Image (spheres, rainbow, N blue to C red):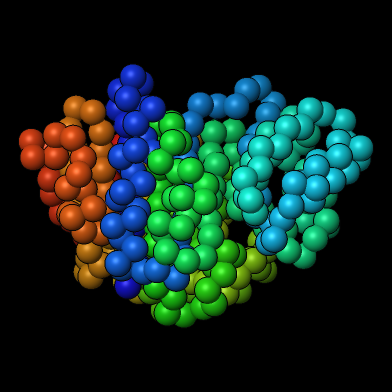
Length: 299
């Protein structure tokens, strides 16, 4: 049992409320899983040629982060700024992403790359989501939309790496409530194509499968349709991209989901109670998403 949450702000003037509205949603879903939590925040594009790289370094000190960025800028040409808060940091850089990521992976076995994108920042940590919210100031974030998750571990380790959201490619993340029965066959198939995995979590298989289909030329809808054919098991998936929030459920809709839409926002959760604090919720269009149907909202 895990919890998923998503919030998309429709009006630009309300983007400053994103953290204020979404953090209580994530906190509430801690009852569905307090092993770990995560949130991907989508904000404005960080500029031509620049990327945001979200990082996690166990027991990091300010000196560790300063040394990391100094070594990076010595190794490559390009601008780089690093904003750190405890073990989490966001690196904003014009250094070519593949070079930067490869370099960072070599620096420490404890350094985790949580996500890469022009607009996406990813926060993940072990423990109750309230810990994540307080530690990283998630009530204060602003932007267009978020994708969040609270985890009750059932099939792999409790760690930052195994926490959701999972990411692949740029500005693409996925959270999952449920269990896949064929993640290892999908993994072996993708590994033969040169796609590397970082964990044994079943959700990573779904994330990398969909990203592989996108890189092969599919639209997101076409990739999901292939997912309906290939992903075996029970799932509610919530996907975030730079411009979209997308929700799908398996053909049996075994895992719960509820959506609420007003003129100001679209909110998604595993349970209605995590939406009850939202302004205008009494007048919202509230519905249970149908099985094997793609729901998509655009910023």
